[in-house]
Length: 264
Image (cartoon, rainbow, N blue to C red; front, side, top):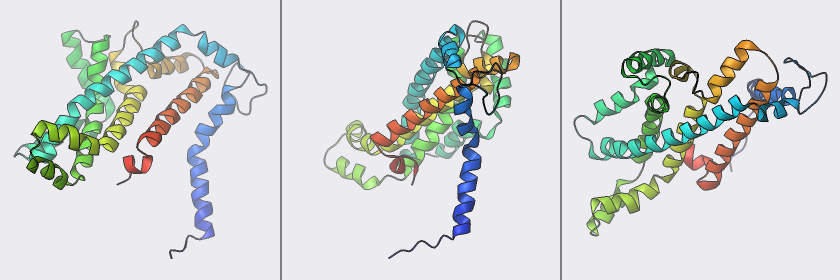
């Protein structure tokens, strides 16, 4: 029988560290219900005025729908490209598999501001700045490596014997992939979906280089809002984004389970 040997001081230390990490998230909740004109804690008065102001802010609402649509499209394209790429790299193991893997995951090694500047220089010459298609391509640069790493790791941990057994029973390669490999990759696909969507939805550095006056995402809109004023509207948006993130996590947990998805 296993016994818990964690000492009381260690438990207290872990609790304090968790509280320290979660404090900014916890504080924005009461601030979002403030009735003051500026950010302050604790609020001197309480009100729903900033949630009402958010609903009446057409720029924020439009930016939210743009971010939502952008995240969905980028996620679908990332998965459509990363799934076959991961299969080729992991299962076929050609001479260039290692090079391809390192090439596609290289953006993870670069600072986002460097990527943003490089994409800006390229897009300025081909007229993609301030366009939705340019945003999609720019976000794919940072979401594809995440999807590929997650899916390649998932596929590498799957037993090859199941696919070999299906092949010996007469299954064609495409049939084996569709009916055996893909179902076994489900936890990794769900994890890659959640990760790509959240990374795209939250991206601000690269997006700042690519947006224009007629096209903006929610993080960029919040960035410009904070530049000119410091009211609790930002806190109300943050609370809604926290609940959106929790909703994504709950969907992952209800479908395949967090332990199967993120823990190996």
